[in-house]
Amino acid sequence: MLPVGMFFGAQLVVVNHDLEHVRVFNAGMPDVIIVDGETSQIRHRLASTGLPLGVEANIDPKEMLQYAPISYNDKVLMHSDGLTEARNASDQEFGSNRLIESIGKAPKNKIFDQIFTDLDQFCGDITTQADDVTLVEIACVHDVLPEIEVHDYIKPPTQMLGDRGEWKLSLRFNGTRLRETNPVPILINYLIEMEELEAERQSLFTVMTELYVNALDHGVLGLDSTLKADPAGFEAYFKTRETRLANLDSGYVIFNLSVEQESSWRRILLRIEDSGTGFDFENHAPPSPREMALSGRGLMLIRDLCESLEFHGKGNIAIARFGWSTNYPG
Image (cartoon, rainbow, N blue to C red; front, side):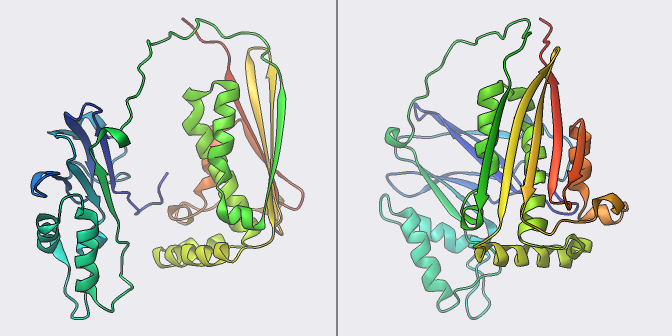
């Protein structure tokens, strides 16, 4: 789903409730650091065991998993490379060594504060960095790691036949609300709850995200996709998007969702309308392979996942049909 040439570094940490161990998934990010909660000394450093997401088409997360023992009140630290690459007025990097020193001299339960105190002193008057500076600290204590109830696995029924009923939902998001809320997760959770479509969650999420981004970016914000013709334009596109979104106080996006039953099939009709000027969809040519390298793949992706995609009105209304079978062999 990522644009060509853009990759996604990711870290995932799962902490055992009994505080016996952590599982770490590190794909192309700096080391995950585990610190002794009593002495502030580093116990483990778990380096990346895989490439950033998007480099390879298929990965096996189990092959990238690492385990490390922990004790009560240990700290798990994750950070972006912008932390160690932060620079001062002399163009020096904060670096890994200074990070390790900050951790080692930190008072008990003050590691997070110590790192940013030292970073602020190092950077001085340089308040804007070239990359984000992100630090996450997980305290390994029971209060923040509630025990999750484990239920017996419930086998799904052999068949799910018959009419489960039709329904409709309409939501409208205006101006400032578009700036503050991403409606896609809200609607996806509602759909999954109503239709028990866990198996189709990713496809539905992709379809709805592409439809919504298209309505917001090109409709409400008036962004021109030709800006993404090259990598430099791609960056300019998103900077312009951030600026316009931050100042957004008008416009709207309307979601109309309806579900219907047809024999052993159910179908979601996704109708998304925006306040933009639209486009000449009747004479709109599909993007060339070169143009699709950085833009134009969203609509192609929707058409691959849905039964159909149509535009109406002045091009500001998109209607996608997503169907699935209610017959599940045992």
